[in-house]
Length: 248
Ligand SMILES: [Zn+2]
Ligand SMILES: [Zn+2]
Image 1: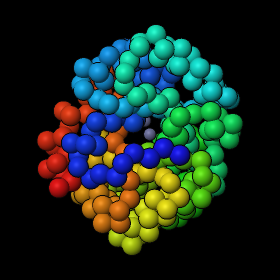
Image 2: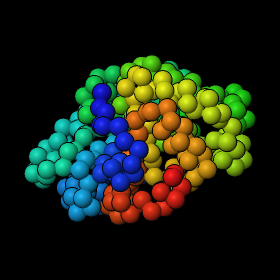
Image 3: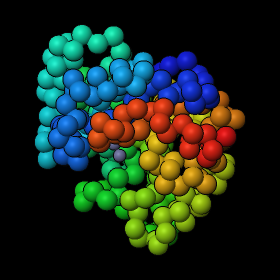
């Protein structure tokens, strides 16, 4: 389990960037080599980063091998920044995990995606209304929390990959405050942090303002990540003026 000290001060939270993809993720830019990612984070003044590559269902056990390679590259950098070698893992249906438990246990940081509905293996609910998707996402998150596999949930509640019910903002608008609060408290009690995912917040400011306020009132832990796929998106501080306008 990985928890930092509880804070709701974005200046403090921005000292970490716990969501970034190296070239082990096919969606990342070719420049996302560990030593250059670390150097960029140092220049930005970050204190802690996590490498969170996707695990691919067709590449069994690749994540654990990649971790060893990244650790070797990390040792060569000699950096003083705390670097967690983790992964963005997948729970693609209620109680269904794309990775094996050995992979999870080998990682420093287990960031779980519960809403990658654009992936072809992802299971969709039978009821394809906004409420149907809300209930499906909540049930997936509930099982991930119960499983004890996750340190943090990646872009939780985000609906931008759902194209089945028109404008995706209809989906996030259909979560009730009680649903959001209850699952966030449950995560906190089980040692699971909630991600402040920069692109998710920028893409759905109305919802993520609610999310931040409900989570803050409930006293949960938030982790900060920019979901960087390019070096230019590793610096967290560049996003703070816009995030403060949205969240405060
Ligand atoms: Zn993701
Ligand atoms: Zn990601």
